[in-house]
Length: 369
Image (cartoon, rainbow, N blue to C red; front, side):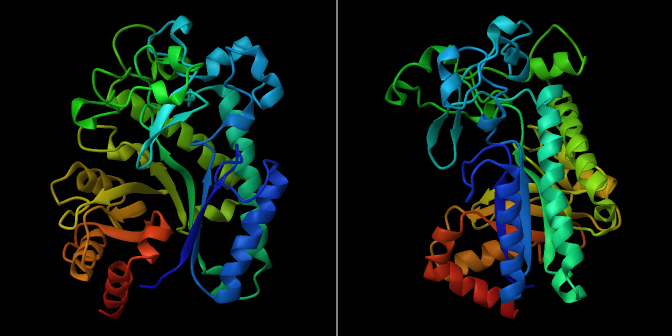
């Protein structure tokens, strides 16, 4: 085991990215990151994310012509590319919320992840980014340098309704100050919609995929179909530009809002990738026991390796070095290695981990075992 670095590249938006929104600039940034990993000889992983931020697509603004001069190209037909709260386009959403430690408002609604126009832009962006990775890989003169690329992950927590959750009557808040936004947030123990204060999303996805056109909220298995359709599209675009990717064992797909009673774990199990998930755990928790849905699904999908990646990890209640050491052992399943194999763990975010003496001390102890 060793330490490396990972970076998440937003390919349809500028947010979180050290470059402007042109794909050529994204490519330069990816290439620079990979070259830096070679220079200091550490393993590296890349996330190509076309999901979490999609403002620059100009596919979401169906509601406000005045936004056209501020990166929000207006087109009433964009109603097809966003999510609805029932099967009528009169319920289209124009805003959303997210909680990454605390709630904040998104200027874009939940995308309809089955939208053909969206998937076309997603495919083009993923293909362009992967072609840069391929070029870097083929320039390396030694297998040692090539082997520094240990993961190429598609998307960051792909889900429906979690990273773009929507309050009841949510569109009415769009022109109000964020200080007036509701603060109850989602409670995932109450189901896929996050509780009675929130609306279920995914109706437009069902309609677009022709799964059904009436009835109640999307089920967990229906959402799985939509997510796997998205992953299939992105994986195919990646493999089209780099066929060798099928055989390198570095391709991962990151599912969000997964759980035994939420979106199925198998939603991120799409050939030829390995699945990745997020785990924000207490010090005593493990990602899944032998009888869990994760273990059962992974054994069925990948019976030989039973391999997955932890796309996001943090210990939420670790205060001492021993706490962190216990959590690191649990996340790598050192005492349960016959059931599941965790290939990579990505700490999100680096700063609070690296600034914690106890976390760093525990990592040193862990690597010396």
